[in-house]
Each structure stands twice: as structure tokens, then as C-alpha cells.
Amino acid sequence: MSTDEMPIVVGPMGFEIPTINASPKEKIFVSKMEQDKFALEAPQVFEQRDAVAVPHELAKAWDEFQVSKGRASGSNDLTLIVEFVLGTQFMWYPQDIGSCVWSNTFRPWVERMCWEICLRGDPEAYTGTTELGLSSIAPHCVQYGFAREIAKMRSGDGLYKAPMIKSLTQGVVLCNTPKVKQLNEANGAGSQENYPEPRSASLYRQIGNWAWNKDLQPYRTCALKESVDVTTVEQHRLQEDQCKPMIICSSLAFKKIGRHKDGFDIHGIDDRNRWDHNQDFPGYRIASDGDRFSRMTTRSWNQRNQAYESHCWNISDTELAKIYKRDVDVASIGEIEGLPIVFPSV
Image (cartoon, rainbow, N blue to C red):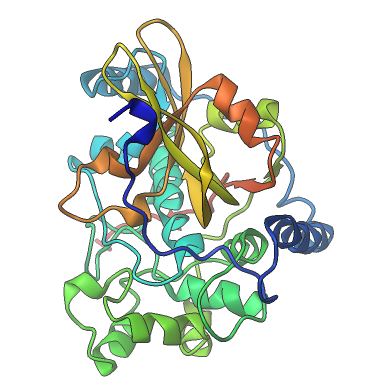
């Protein structure tokens, strides 16, 4: 089998708007219109902020860790940062419904939060310390319901970028919130594998159809304070250089198109397939020859027994330029308002 014929295991998709059978261009037009409205309401949130430097010793430790994982020096691959911080790579469970706009957003959200605290040194608390359970580092999936209410979507599955980003600017709900535990247990989902996303597809759909929004609205925290629409390769590179992961909604599919001499696969657009899906850009890797590859992932399709890289793409400069010539809707996950550190009383 040639390199461009290697199969990729495809999971559920969910890049949708409240219009049946909309084209990719129509979906993105709706999202852009919504995004323009949100930007008028809170322009300071949707403007690019300057980068804040990482202290030298921390930057050196991060670089050395990435080298130990097969990246060349100078990489900035945030798919590795949870392991850098907590000592293990988190997989989470794969999405079972069309929740990709949340399932592939909470992963880079966690990575950005970890970068702010661990590498930039923000005096804030981590949102959790485990992959699953009440102490999960990931926000709870009620965010899917919050965003779908903004989009006025209350049946079926799916979502699009603009309402997801808007919902993040209003804060997330953490898994250790007592009301989350109460609701999970009342719905037979009290075991640890039901945090941050329930294993019951029917319960997840109820949550996506706003069932828990009113109950959990008062507990929102950690608002997203910065997100910009990314429409060019130059803007894309700026986000990567500033350690701001991105989410992308599109109908683009991807495939393996080669293999680098360093031993990693190279990927590009697969025009013979279509994924109406949300994916993410969590940084970049540098190869030993100096070439830079944007990292792109759809980790919500990863089964827990699969290799972590099963749905991680390495995108060359040439392929990245092709992406931005297509119908794509990309936004960064920048500054997150972190949790204050609570010191024990003496």
C-alpha cells in the first residue's frame, strides 16, 4: 500500500449549523457573521494580544523535554505539555456523538491553560490533576450545551465555531463542581469515566440540548479572554509562536502523504473524502533538517487502546497554505483567566 493510501479510522462528525444540508461555505458564512457580532459586543476579547516571554530556564526544560520525545530543538508541540506537567499523557475517551466542536476544543484549552501556569508562570491553580473523574483537568461538557444554546440548536448533534468560542468567553464549569457530581449521579453517571464527558450518548445529547445549562450556569469560571479569527498562514504562525492553539471547523479530510526521515508521518488534504468536523492546531514540531510542521489533531477519534499519534497530523508549509485557500473557520485559544491559588488558612 502506498503512503497516500494508508487508512485513517474516522469517527463521528459534528460541524453543523441550524440549516439542513448546508454547504461548507454556508456554514462558515453563518459562523463568520456570528463572530462579527460577538466581536462588536466585546472587541477587547477578539483582538490579538502581545506574547509574554517564558523564563529562560523553563523554556530550556520544555525544549529538552520535547527533544526527549523525538522533536528537534525549537519545537513547540503542546500535545506534549500535559505529560510535561503531570508526567503522563491523557487520552480521554473518544467522542460518541457529533460533539467534536467541544471534544476537540477542550483538549487544546487544557494545553493552553497548562502552558500559562507551568511555562509562563502565571500564579494560578490547575483546573484538576487527573484525566477522568471529579478531579479531571478538563472542563465539563456542559460547555457543549452552553454553546448550542447560543447557537439556538436544540435537537440532533453538532455545532460550529463561533458559538463555541463565545461560550468560552463566558467561562467553563469544572468537573469538581458539587452540582456536576449531583447531576451526574442523579442520571446514573457517577463513575469516574463519566467526567468530563458522559459515556451515555443519550445523556450527552440531553446535555447538548441545554438540559443542564440553567443548573450549572452559576458555576462558570476561567473565562477565555482572547480569541482571534485566523485567516492566513501568517496569522497562523503568529498564534503558534505565541503558544495559542487553534480550533478549525471545515469539511477537509486528511491523509498520510509521506514519511519524514526522522520517522514521523507527513499529512495533507485528502480531496477524495470529506469530514464535516472540528479539529485543532496545538503547535508545531521542528524536524532535524529544520523544516517546520504544524501539528493538527482530531484526538476525539482516538480509541483508548490506540497510539496517541493515531489522529495527529504533521502539516508542511505547503499543505498549510493549501488549507487557508479552502473554506475553513479557524480561531485561537489565547489568554485564559485562571483559577486563583487558594492557600490553606493558618
